[in-house]
Image 1 (cartoon, rainbow, N blue to C red):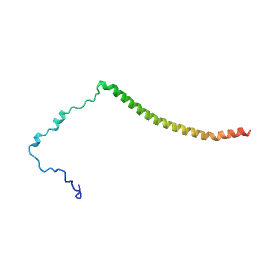
Image 2 (image 1 turned 135 degrees about the horizontal axis):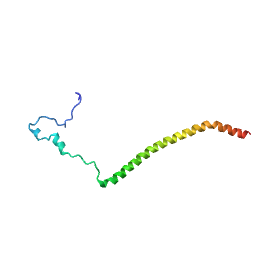
Image 3 (image 1 turned 60 degrees about the vertical axis):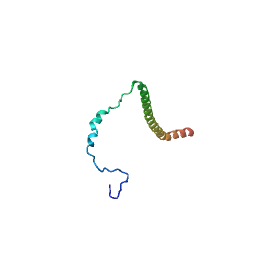
Image 4 (image 1 turned 120 degrees about the vertical axis):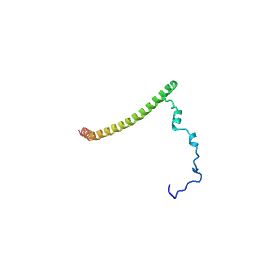
Length: 102
């Protein structure tokens, strides 16, 4: 904090340490022993619903990925078809002109 900054007036300040209060506080190891981790295993009744939700999620992700790849493949196919037509166009025009010139 720089000298130009001021503290708000409603922040409480520590003005004294009260002796004897440290014995009343729990130790971290006591707190950790009291905590039991939550169960991560779903109940058997929840399994069909979780399986359905998981399958729906996988379907959605796969559909999005496939859609992206399909769009890319379509663009590439269109570009390739246009390039091939541009390359064949002079031959097709010559053949058409030769047919009409006979």
